[in-house]
Structures are given as structure tokens and as C-alpha cells.
Image (cartoon, rainbow, N blue to C red; front, side):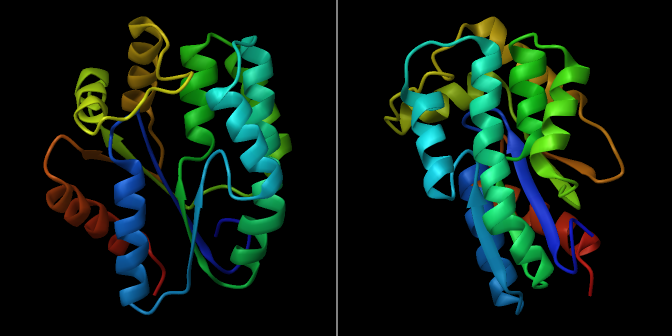
Length: 206
């Protein structure tokens, strides 16, 4: 399993896909099933990672490589101080984003070399990877409309051109692997949660 005796699931998707809502609901459901759960978000979760979050989401414009490294600073610190110890203690980690977002945003979206991005990710995570990725699939337009309806002020990445967000969405849609599951996330939150929970139940060790 992901780095130890515990279990690690990451919710992924475009802006406005419902990751934060679904991660919180999944964590609550897991606790109700008797699991010891740690919730994390990316970037963030440690003092250093929160500083990186402010810079990357609310700071000035920066080169794509600098953006990548800020995300990786946050991830390396979060893995070292929160995720890896939780997994070693047999806990379940529920993440609002993880490294699939880096591949989607910084490689596909920003155009950085995918192999180089993957190598940098590997250095940051030190072998700690999710046992399951749940990708919430919605179009960038749907996600943007949801955020506008909620009155959310866009951050630095959300203000990027539509072409960027289309490339990111396509990367998420194309994500495949034995530990990658896709959920159509255009429905109401309850319907999406039930779909996510079914997938998690199938994969979660007894």
C-alpha cells in the first residue's frame, strides 16, 4: 500500500469539479465506517506548504518551472511530516489533490517536459503514492460556472486562459491506470458521493 500499512486515496479534477466537497464527505464516511482518517489538501497542510500555497495561488506571475517547484516544495514537506507518518501508523489518508494534478497542470497545462516533471515528482514524494486516484470528470466550463455561482474569487491558476484549462481537463480525462477511477461529476453532490464511495469500498482493504 501507499508507503506503509495505511491506505491513501486522492481526489483529482479540474477547478470546480467538487474535489474539496467530495474529499470531506469521503473522510466523514470512512470515519463512520470506523477508519482512522487524515485529511490533507494540496498545496498545504504544513506551515511551509501553506506558505508555498500562498505564493503559487495568490502571488505574482512566475515561470512554469518556478510554479512546479513551489508545488513540489509543498508536497515534499506534506509527505514527510503528515502523509508518510499517517500511513506508517496504519491510517487512511484522503487528499484533495496529489501528484496527478502536477502532471495535468504543469506538464499538460504549462507544457513542461512530462518526463522531467515525473522525475521531479518522484524526488518529492519519495515513493509515497496513492493507492487510488478518483478523478472527478467535469468540463472546465461547468467547473467555472459552479465557482462563479458560489461567488469564489479566482486564484492565479484559475485566471489562466481557456486553452490552459482545456489541456488540464484533457489530461485528467486521459488518466489511466490500475489505481485510477473516473466518476462523472456533473451530477448533484449526493450522487457523486455515492459513486465515489462505491469505488472506495471496492478498493479499501478490509
